[in-house]
Image 1 (cartoon, one colour):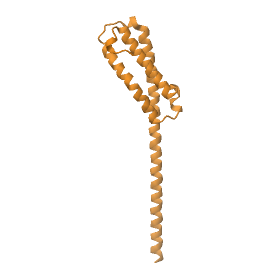
Image 2 (image 1 turned 45 degrees about the horizontal axis):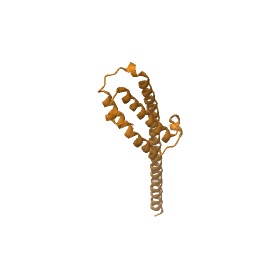
Image 3 (image 1 turned 90 degrees about the horizontal axis):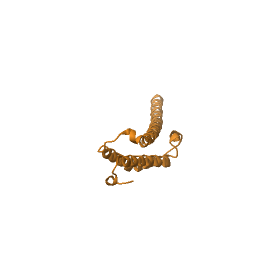
Image 4 (image 1 turned 90 degrees about the vertical axis):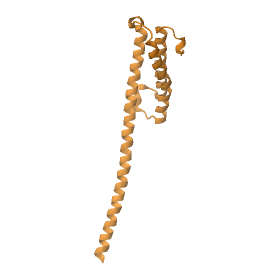
Length: 144
């Protein structure tokens, strides 16, 4: 990746953007194995955090490139191939991210169910003990 000072044309800016998207996509595939099977795998939150942290640098670079690109006047028709490839990579990342968000939501729901189940079990246990204690008191009163 070049620094912004070394980028002198729209084409170079677009190629830098494309490189960033490709790197993000490669990192994503490396960490998640395959973008299409996200919901079928069990990823740790550490692994997902690692992915998001590794992407952050390139996303910041993309923001800077986008701002820098606005300084140039250019026709999309002249750079159609590069823009089309950037768009394709961006769509792929959006699809993977949507699946990743679904996976995280599914994990959250499962954790809530698990915690609810544990809390419910404890409440039943406490209620059972209280009922047993009340029955014992009732028996004690009747025996007297």
